[in-house]
Length: 271
Image (cartoon, rainbow, N blue to C red; front, side, top):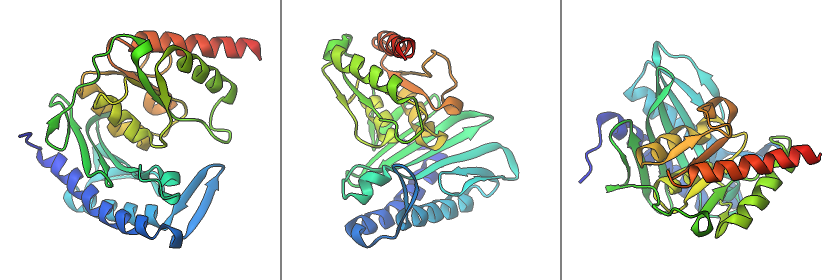
């Protein structure tokens, strides 16, 4: 049985407490108050309640840590080394449409590096967790990325840009290229869970542009600790600043990166 450290227990317990409210609200989704942040972006009372619960629980356990939350933004702490990076409801659009695919994502950053992550999927009761150097798990089962070696056998996850969030033409070119080279592309609507699914071997890879730190903090660590590779589109490690993410197993990361980069280059040359 996997042994969870004290910090993973803190994160997991906070997620479980917030999830109870989300599950109640999901059953009454038609009654939620919803506001629009921008094209394709919503915030509901469920997001805000979950965020309040997570803040309360994390502050109680580690009162000095700084915080970065999706809705309320950054909050300084007395401990300059540590920061929580949290999305209280990743997959809000799914949630508001009654689609049971959403998650709570909590990452812990120490000295600028993600060292612990939890992604909790309430509907399936799947708790993904990882700590630097200690592996990745779902509940008590160890995770490993897929062992498939051929792009033609791979299922790849993605997220589609909306509004002015990213270069639409370049994205459509990458989508066409990946569709043509793999056995399928999935767009499920939660980047945190997409990364968790790469770590679990359900997807062979995942790419998306212009994500926010709270979308990816926990998931990046999960993929790494499950034996996978994550980078930005240039092959570097600027994912948290650029928001561009490419994750895959060791066999497919380079060919998938080459495919996406060539598609982007061709699209920008054409326009």
